[in-house]
Image 1 (tube, helix red, strand yellow):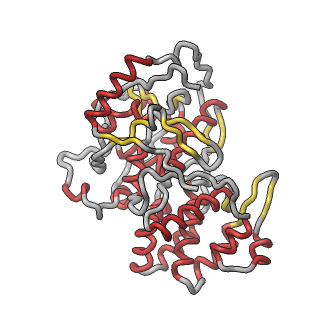
Image 2: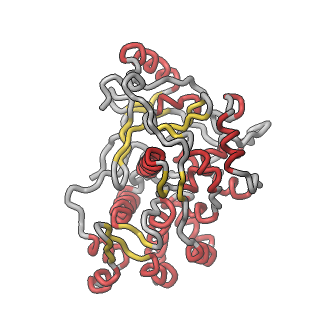
Image 3: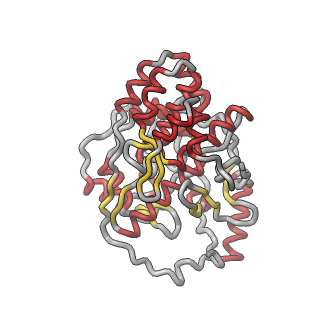
Length: 372
């Protein structure tokens, strides 16, 4: 069942007025009773799936097939070519604040926003406010696989694996279908599922977890039935924030959010240009393609990144990335200024008020009095 959880977007001036009023009325109480007890260092595992098969499939497709894929699923295929700077991600997590769901670099707060990730992925075939909510009585995993692949029940049952409480299907079971299935749209859909399972939500190495298949089935249905489906970004952000929270609190762990997007997001705020080219505001401009064409610093040590973040000043970053031009901003849901983000394996709060500077507005500490 699709839910319109994200309900309120407004222009910058309205956001500012409402923020000032809310902060004066409610105040910030989180710090009063919350003593941070986080490990000083975090050992983060950002190991990724092997994507050679995905690269091979994408390179074999002609421009028409690629165009159909992009029209349906945005620019997610470009994530295949993104090399993750593990030292950068390792340095970033030291500055993650689980209480406010943001990075605090020196005295500057930053966090990926829904608007930014939508722009990065060029998710145009989705309704901004339509988010993923798990169906109360979902179809069985086997039936979903049969519908996605058009294979038999016996085939689907044979592919399904289980370890402890985790149910998944090996990517190798879908690879031949993606390469050879006669129906082009089936190949496109299964390729998109592989990207979501292996890159965006990489919970089980070499496999696609059942929750990813549930999510993708809803995403695909929305595209096919409504021509404008659910917005995948809140779910992507939810799992990114949840993984950051878990690793930061424990001081270790494997990051199972989309490391590629997080890597691109932080570097995009250092992407300084003297004059913003007009084509950056065009609907045909693909930021991920432009990112891949640029030369980025190589072999930068983790210690150097830590020093950069420890000494970060407001003038060091581009608060409003030149490639995003939102006319309205999400800042609350109903009367709540903390926005609930629903992930595949849990939920998390999100405070857009904290990072309004990323849209050339001013920063507001979100009201936390009475917040569970």
